Image (tube, rainbow, N blue to C red; front, side):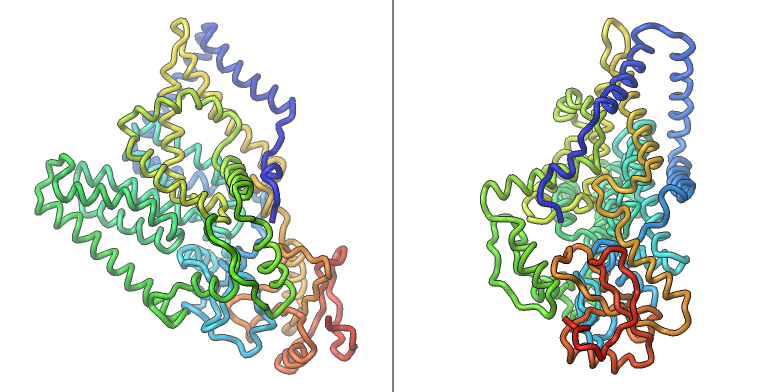
Length: 569
């Protein structure tokens, strides 16, 4: 999709730098030169926020509602997103399937005409992805629009991060960390403004790590169930990264159950209130996952993702792997994608490893951090000596390599680590905030500047209608969506034959459909050879047939002249 990490390193203009410096200087001046009114105002505001943060359940609910309300309030500037990335359509297919009350769909007899990326057609018609994100989208679709599921899951993500942080940090710092996460990921982020996912896996990671300190202190049945539920969410959203994320947690639990970790909870209570519910929930999860796999792939242990890899992918998955022999595909776009772009964009060499690693870091930095966060670096060193978050550091360093040893890795692949990242950011701010210079709270002023600059950046992004930090989702899919809207308002059913040009951008795919093929109001099909096209038109002889050429300037609908010899490639 992109060949250089430089495309993701947004250059900061002198105006940006001067503005950030001015805000930081203003915060410093307020504490270096005593200003009673300003200082008192800030301290009163912080006391009010701290008192509110101590009402933990209320704070969690309020944060959830705040994210929903703010995102809805800016719909005029950041409207409901149109899907445009391959993966988004695959997730939407899954959500549509679940919303129709099915786990998968039957293979269509003319499936070659509808074949598209990240979708399995054999043995059943389904998305290749784990089902958790599909459940969120299905809930949204049942409520009126799939994006409602994104909105609710993203707001729940911020609430879950707050609950997790409350288990590790003082209440006011936990609230600050969750607010930072909401500002970064809950408004002008592709996690909120696409259908790609991320939030569900964050909720899973937050439940796992939020339950852990509570189990150690109280060993309550509720916390054990929440931990197991978090593992279940990770297994059904980001299973690869989630497995490594859960590894240190599993080791700690074994040691705690065995009495190797100091605890006042009796051994029998540990087994009854913690081990038994965790084992039960995980056993049920394994059973449900096996049933889902069986319905989708025909085998309880065969995942849809593995089916798609076997069917289509020949490029390496991990950095040390070599590409498999090239395959032959049913259409030119798959040839270009799988035998071209995927196989040539990464070369197994140290230079190739360096290039893709820099690209991953640039994307991660854009999504999780902001320019003013650089002020935390001196204080971050102190976090390594901090016993309070030592276990979180362990989880981070066990999980983070998983993101960098795969060839393709996007920021939402790091979703399980999100709560850890913001916990470490906030703990760095705690260390920074106690720094004094000449008896003045310079560190606290810098911490306030960091938060204020993120808030300002978010407002500016919304005002500029920037819905995505890395420029993938904003504006994509609008042409296709306009055609769907146009045909939805016309009577009858419609079949759109998609004809691509020789210089087609393989990331601009238009052939995607929902769970219903025969019953769909608007159906997209790939123009193939004459025999396949004729069979398709004969099968759908009750439909109005159109031609669209996405690679033309301002593509428009044209009547499809099947009898014209040059109408097929």
